[in-house]
Image (cartoon, rainbow, N blue to C red; front, side):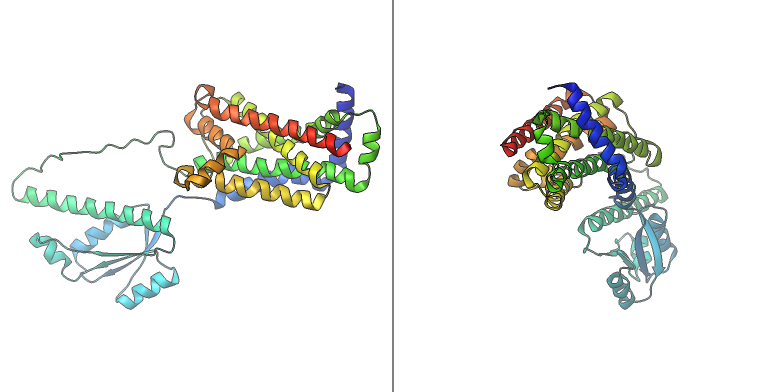
Length: 377
């Protein structure tokens, strides 16, 4: 392999990119656009759940109970209703996700110590949000019930009993449990996988369609030099995209980056080399720009989005699907980025993921080279 030939091919590809604004826009603008759009649109936080109330008691006790919902950031009371039909209409129309129905004898039963039942209606069409909203409501009700019990004991002149068990939860790495802190690193991996494979999937296919590949093959340039020369410009653009994505995550979304920045870019370089080689392999096999772009999208976006652990926990997937995720390279990069971003750990913890990622990069590069040699024959 001669560096001058590689440089000549790389220069030719650079000139092509610069002369084609669409390619340059796709390479730089689209990843940032996707990152900003997905970063704002994708959220798993459950805040300000719309809630309606049918307070049949309308007493000080019922208002005190409702104050536990009004003072919470998880609920937003959207209206006070007057009958069950209005409650049904609010939940059916989506105006409310949660409805609280307080019975008429609420205050009397609380005062007598007989205990009161409050009905909580939750829209289960979004099961995750419904589960979390029901959990938040249960905590609010328990807090109110505990306060009532303590007040009653004090009025009787007694002392509030000591709690036999007190759980003191402490959340590591993402203390505020903000979903964007782990969504943004995962998004960087998914977007880079898609864009990198999509960019290089067109390069060789374009040469075949225009008939210029035969000219390239007839020159002294070897297959490995041609592949490496074509990969270099997109690798540089890809690393520039990674830099922009890290800056967007840091300054726009304020995602904490606790780990080693050099390690992050080193892992990104390995991942990019594999993703670009994958696109190159698709381009070599298909020889068609349309087919190559479609195949690159199918082979990268869906597996990276669904099976990388970015959106859905891999441990919750069926056993067969869990095995399948081991061949998804984005799985390792997502795990690496989360470890570097949130936990601040290094290779002493992430060595396995880094090893698999390196194996992916080497295997795809070698496979693209072998496949191109066969195509030449």
